[in-house]
Structure formats: structure tokens, C-alpha cells
Length: 226
Image (cartoon, rainbow, N blue to C red; front, side, top):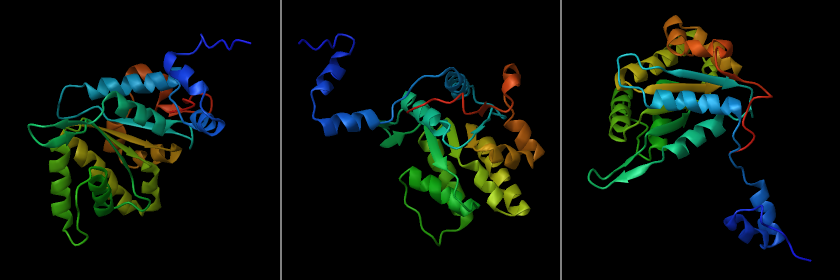
């Protein structure tokens, strides 16, 4: 009996003859599966990524239930714009930076998380102003164009006053760096951003997506894999 593998790519055909353990691992590996709603989100991210620098950059809110594929969309965007080493400057350029909002966020914790993501050293005793200045400088040096902040709903774990501080931080980063900030989280992320009118307006979806305000990925509209 001849095994017909003509429907598979050449690279995939070679994998068919691996042992069962290896093939099971390959099946379990997350892979990107295109989906119309995910395509809309990627198109919007790409449009913002290429947006000319201005005083008020078009930020974005992406929210939906846990496990609906939000992180997969960000990772796909990161793969479309991968990091590259600039030999002339001796710096790894990172056009897309993804950072997770700490579970009990404050300015120092958030900036420390950014430094960790960028692989930069940090000291617990360093003054907040110095940490903030270093993060701003590093994000400029790595050429960040899209700063994606996941788990934004963690802001609700803080008091109202502390929430306002964190929201001001998001606004400050967008204004100071003049880059697009993408806030990502559950439906609570939407409510967190609505507590500040200026932040809410900045993260408002574009007019032609009025039917998706704010951009929401429900159970029937998420990508199924990475």
C-alpha cells in the first residue's frame, strides 16, 4: 500500500515519519490559524504601526474573554515585525514590544517589567524618576513603534487614585514617545479605561469599526491557535 502524501508540503512530509512522541508534540504545538476577526485586528495594528509620528498617536483597545486569542494576535504581529540586531549601533531593534501589566500595578513595577522584557538591568533602590527616564530612553533606542500592554484589567486591583495614576502612565508613554500604545485585556480592561475620559477617547476604535466598539473578540470570533 502506497502512502499518498501529495497533499502535504515537502517539509511536512518529512515529519510524518518521525516517531509517535515527536508527531504528538507537533500536533500539540500552537500554530497561527487565520480568522476574519483576527485579520481585522491585525490590519488595525498594522495601520497603526505604520502611522506617521504625531502628537496624538492612534492607540488601540483590544479586549475579550480569557483564552480568546488576544495574545496570539500580538505574537503574530511581533513575528511580522521581528527584532533585528543593528551592528552599527550595537543595539537589538524591537519595533513591537509586548509587556504584561503587573498583577498589582504601580509605576515602578510596570517600568521594571519593561526593563525585564528589554533585557536591561535594574536595581530595586533606583528612584522612580530615574527608572522612568531609562525606560523612555531604551524604548527610543530599540525603535519601538508599537507598545502592547497585556492584562490591563489588573488596574482594577488598585484603588481609584492608583488607577488614575496608572492610566496617566499609559497616556504619558503615548505622548512622550509618540508611539502607538495597545491596551489588551478582558472586558474589565474596557471598564478600567473608561474611568478616565481622556484615556477612553484616546483608545477609542476608528469610526469605520463602529460596529465593533470597542474591538471585542467573543467566543465565536477568535483565532484558534498561534
